[in-house]
Image (tube, rainbow, N blue to C red; front, side, top):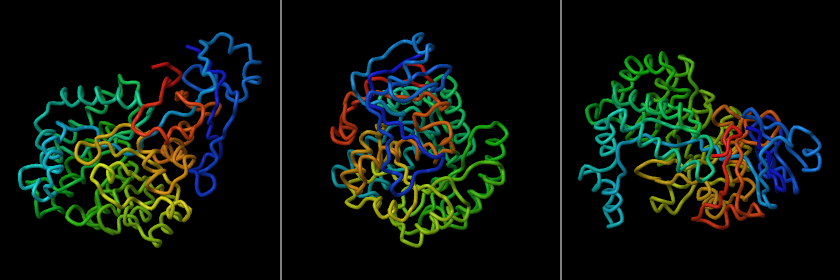
Length: 412
């Protein structure tokens, strides 16, 4: 159906088909008294209302008067872990009572509890839970997410999780980009043998993932106590050789050398980067790797330190923001909250945070030419905010100020 949004304050984010860096992360493409015309799932016209309304086709569209409010691209959340069996509420209660991670793990909590509940859930149950979660993302203005596995950590459960993503993607308006995060943690049955576990993933799971077309990316957690740079390289290179894109959890808890591996493999993104240094940033910039920052997990865990977004941006590395939605360290699906944290805790301007949550997030998923900005010919993923000043997006933290969401031109 044809849709026309008029009387809008547009944030088009129009520009070159490249990830935005440095000063380019402050150019939001503001147009007052603008309009957007959508048809056949694409943006057909966008710009000043007087110009858009001259086209006779726009008169055939359903009219949405934005009343001077902000109209912008839907959020692209480029780092989530949405497939799991149960929320980790017991862990949360223990942590808020002062228990350490080690104490929680000793009581059967932590990632082991997510492995247990995910393995115990049927494919149908995982599908239904993910479907329920997907509507919460779209209600908050997110129109595309990257969705990782990583809580099954055996052949059957990782494939079950990927198939759940495929099922939901076929029927949900939320768009999914699936990632096989087989190397997320070392499962209990492989403790002390991470190399053997990686070999199993490469030999037994990856071929099925590729054969069934279940993932677009592979991912690994490069960190002490998880997977070494050598083990991550082996797994990620096997995925790349099989035709999948590469992502990596890097420099989250310690300086793990994951960022340099991301540069070596020309990964789509290096995520977290809490402990990245100047050398890492030079390598990432030169390799064209996007820094995907996920401050929601720092916030939820009560960490005082956040990734140094200001340093990363000033180094010329393109920055994306994401929720890191997961049951253990960030049960948050609202990108508006992440934008607020980024501006108040990480030294980002509101403009930079908006760019990082839309067009740069799209580039982190290989979708920069089709998603993430309001430009003619791009997918019509559009949101209307209940505000007339885009700074309110970060200012009114803890609330949802999205009033309308269009996905592929359809009003959700």
